[in-house]
Image (tube, rainbow, N blue to C red):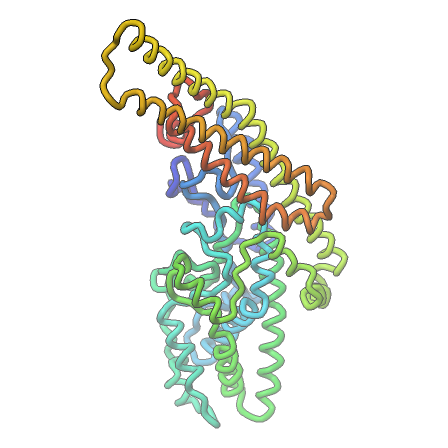
Length: 447
């Protein structure tokens, strides 16, 4: 295991070695538990929240996935012969097809309240599911897709670049850190997983959708092989899937507004809402998929949907009530204390001018009044939006979980964001002696 400093202050990355997915999931859960316990021993807190601080990079997980045969051979490694390379391409396009058909399930597998803050925040992939392959591999696939011929010979396979597939080292492929699902040499890296998540869910989803896709590819190769030689059959199936999955391949900057527009043209969904993303779990086709592969019964998936919607609501309710308490017990009293000090100073200046004939430069009173008015306005905005927030919580308390989750995403989260911005504005102008809470600069940058 390696460890190095990350982008944000006091942020670190752990990079566990590869192992079987079941063990990896268990070990990741144990690691999170240990990190939190050890931090407490040192009078620290280990934050696993995806976006604990506004304006500072949040945290996530990169779930590296590959597939091996029963001899331990990595099936996402290009081989030494055309046949080995055809096997690699068949597995590769199986993954592309799985992501193309089941991107909704991948999105649902990373849907939680904390991840809503992080996905698409110019530090993590957006909620649009796409695949990055790298320039070299993309050219090979495009060449295969365009090279449709009645009969594919050994020479044609060479022409398509299959005979001499280059070694796809990580240095050649891992150039796009903005992609949610990137090929990195001999594996795929799912970069949209939340830092607080149990990785078991995205692993289960990836394994299931790719199992279905591998079966589809295998059946189609068998079907094609009845009328032509095996290599030609593989190449024909690969070429068709490359064409069918073109829309999810993207080599550019996933953070850009241009990609959001381009993805919409391609018909790729951009689901930023956790409640909306989780609906994928209870779609009929998806229920049948997990049932057919004996991963989850429909009842188990439906139960997970309701549990995760409930957790989403509960998380936002806890955050909202905590915010309300902080505003009314700390933020507003600090602001009022500072406001009272400004009012007192202004009153004293006015009295001194009248009674002691104090000479005050032109503009001083106006400046003091503007500062006092500004502080008063900031306090008003914080209080007004906090009242709206609590009224919303009261209004939706008898809603169904689904309806409540929708209201929380559309109404509660924007209100909480609005309150936080005004509190931040107050923090920047209220003096330290009147602000007992730690400020961002003290928590993150003052050692």
